[in-house]
Image (cartoon, rainbow, N blue to C red; front, side, top):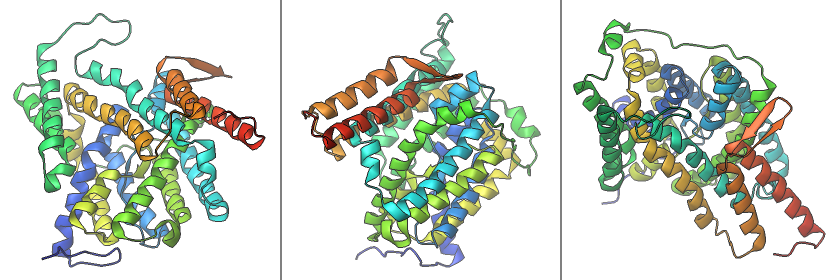
Amino acid sequence: MARRIIGIHEKLPVLESLPLSFQHLTAMFGATILVPILLGVDPAIALLMNGIGTIIYTLFTKAGIPAYLGSSFAFISPSLLIIGTYGGFTHAQAGFIFFGLFFVAISFVVKYWGIRWIDVVMPPAVMGAVVAIIGLELAPVAAQQAGLAASAGQEFVMNTNTVIVSMFTLLVGIAGSVLFRGFLAVIPILFAVVAGYLLALGMGMVDTAAIANAAWFALPKFQTPVFDINAILIIAPACIVVLAEHISHLIVTGKITESDLMENPGLHRSLLGDGVSNILSGFAGSPPNTTYGENIGVMAITRVYSVWIIRGAALLAIAFSLIGKISAAISTIPGPVMGGITMLLYGVIAVQGFRMFVEQKVDFSKNSNMVLGAITFVVGVSGASINIGSVQLKGMAFAAVVGVVLALIFWVLRKVNLMNE
């Protein structure tokens, strides 16, 4: 017998909705809390603003798009640069607010001029390389947390317990990714983090006193943004990457739900809802949000597309963010656990860039594509940097800028018939 399909606008009874909503919460939970942990921010604020942002998103899209907004990985590298160089996370928040405003502005551009210009500004040969660089430039950070490499300028000394915990977490994540079936297949990261946490707990590496002393009810830690043009300029290149991700997620969700979501309720509404939620997140002190592939995967498996289920997951996230002991438990996840799982995650992010080359059928026999991909990669992974005033662009940010400029030059050359493909 065919499995029942729950439509986008269908509303189920509470007892049926609750486990389905919790399923979505668990699917996004591991990745969503990982981002604030890596940036040194209270994970509870991310859960709170992800939940609020998702509800705002469903309102702007007229409850027509079943999408959950979780913490974006694309901003980790530029955020770490800002935190380490320009004054801390509160300065990075200025960049996050700009990202929200960028999406709001692009929503109006899309409404009146469509989306074909995106392939001109950042064609697949550049986009795939930039996405790969996001994972590659973060890989050394994962190795350091896993106890397999030393930080810059420090002598490497191996700690056996650190390596045991990190490698155990990594192996559980790998096993879950290739062996799990059904619902478990969408939460291998969460499963691995829990397993690594329990091992670290047994080895005395978890600060249990922090959990015991935490209140049952506690408000997340809010932070006021500091306006910083440097942070905005560093964050800006990543905005194009997340824009492309947003569009691809909407297309995939439309295929799964057999709906033309790009037209109804429309990409412009989707971008507007995402943008407004990110403006609020930036002011509150939360990392930026983005539509989550993990939750798209849940919908594909369960065939439950109801926006009401997504809203239920958002309400559960808000509730979890207010439970102090849960926030404390998340905050005490040892570095080796995060190091082990991020070795897998950052590698997966890098591979997603190569996957884009395949899915977009990038023809590297064309000189233009070969040059775009090659130069973008070299700029991103070589450690090259450039100073624009007081701002240093490097890594993914510098690669994205170079890729966009080169793509625009090639587009002009094609228009005047000077390009040799």
